[in-house]
Length: 303
Image (cartoon, rainbow, N blue to C red; front, side):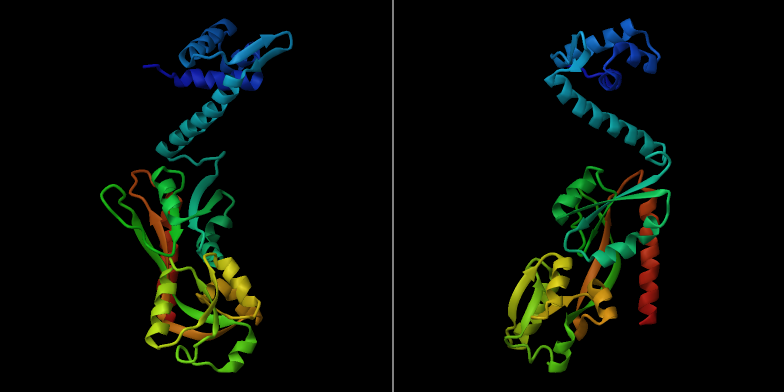
């Protein structure tokens, strides 16, 4: 089986950047002939010529350009491995927090959770949005440090996730102020009332459907939305009432653009931080999760 030498890749990256064996050798503190031998060994291992040499100097071949992409990826992964194992700040002294956030999650809630990191110069936050399933794959592959979700992750022997309940907030029906004047009672007066709801995959949607069905009423679903930001925009159009946690539309309620017409205490939206079992966890994760847990306890005592 062919053997790939990590040092060969490191030398190759420097040569590819300098496009000169002499300059690369100086940077690596090697002699040019010794570096040339290392490059030849890498080319023999890969089975392809990586450089063309001409009057204008060295240029990467097509195989060389492809190899450079992989070498950069492997090099960055190696540097990150050393940082993690030695608990060093990444990125030139800055801490890095990589967050996966489910696309349907409230942007206001994400901001509230991440605010301490965003206001500290030594932290860098990288946010990746997507479906819960793909984000858990990224979490398992160490591509993110935690996942923010509105539902816990299923735990098993192969994926021993920890789902930390960060907050549980009531869900309300909200709309433009004109809806408040209609004085509709929920759920009995909601037959054919236009509503904007989360998609069928949402737990809050399932609970809403159960409530209206038990009351024998059938609201008119004018839109199903799996993105909270879009749901908020549709509510502002004034054509229907939107089912959301108030945190999603906090700014609109404070400004009077939207009002909370009905609190639905039977339904609540949950917010979780999902973390893996790791020997070397990102130290920033525990700080943020702990802070949010304290904030939630204080909020519940206040209410």
